[in-house]
Image 1 (cartoon, helix red, strand yellow):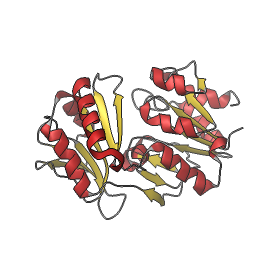
Image 2 (image 1 turned 90 degrees about the vertical axis):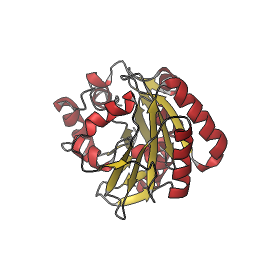
Image 3 (image 1 turned 60 degrees about the horizontal axis):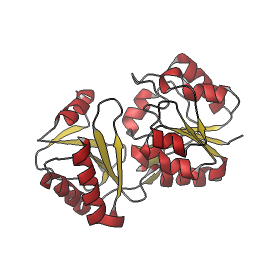
Image 4 (image 1 turned 30 degrees about the vertical axis):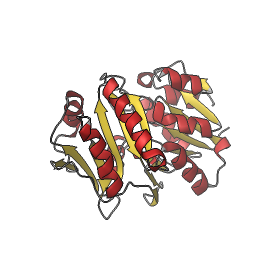
Length: 273
């Protein structure tokens, strides 16, 4: 039996409407009483806390694709950021290709999140912003400059442009940044997420294991998308939900018969693991 469980949220543990069923909450909290149970998500600290308000987390949280690791007692374990010089250079690459990024960073306190959005927005980006109406973290960024401490820089657009941008950044910045390209499964666009080279879920998972003094071979991880593959390679057991991307299913040790909307993770836990 594993001693650490880490699950992705969107399209894995959360339902498509961003809710958790009473069943999933009950099963998760039952196991969290005796096992280390945490999350590994692209979402921020603030949004994760809101979505998981009824959930007991007994292991650290991996947030913003791995840029931040927070203990179950809300203490910062690790944070990896992109500095302003590199951040501005990464933003300039997109601008030259006709697209400006979202920028997610922090103030002096790591809990004080900032979400910058550009003047020029494509249809995909406009759709994302609908979910951030009245969000106090949201700030207009007309100059397209980044912050002193950037947790991640995110481009969202049509596939061909995102592939071109990804290839350009990988070529120009090599080991200076982690670039993850993945489809948004329901909206039709593609995300390009830029992180510190050690700010991904795989490195963050190792931080969690070190913190808990657990070997990664004793961990079980759940996911559905490209940003979960690093964890899949590191964990003792990797589990893909039925609605996961095909390349994620191919990398998984186990592919579940249920989707996120069918409480796949909770059913796996209940089955005896």
